[in-house]
Figure (cartoon, rainbow, N blue to C red):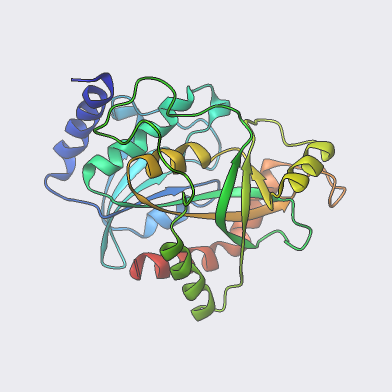
Length: 274
């Protein structure tokens, strides 16, 4: 038995002890300020990350750090209420571990969300962007190391990391709810520092529409495992040098508070139609 399988088996045993034969079909990872959606899950079972073997622990404000399992819009879901980031000191490989656990529980679709800074000057704080593709500017990869074919192929294709069919559902729900949605490319940096204006210019030159400090590890791991993936970025601020204002995490949380209702309505509509 590989180490990856052994670690996953230990985590599954702890979770199964609390949920029995409950089988989620959709996994969600909620970024900064977005954990409110998990509070709307019906018949929830809540398990702190700290109680699950192998799970990294959230250390950032706005991330509760627990797994929530139950029903949302009539669908069985497993939600990471809060996520962990590379800048918190975890190996890139460990950031993908929760995705493998959720896949092993039964989820074959993943909605991954994040708070991002807008590189595209046509965006504004409070906007939402469907991720069409990403750029990994960390120059690290969660799949480095021995590969276990039980989780996916040695050399996975990433030409469509984000599933076109799920992107279509997102846009349809945006139109139905009168919630404008951008579509674009997300660039991940390591953090925890925000980008400099010069780095933002580089991101724009490379084709990025938004920048952030997460999402790539989970999306890549999910794609490797054969899951369908939908990524949605909440634009918490304009990236450095665009507005001329200093960037703060508090601003992101405050902006999310103003638009939380439309974010929750959109995700609920997407889940209902997946």
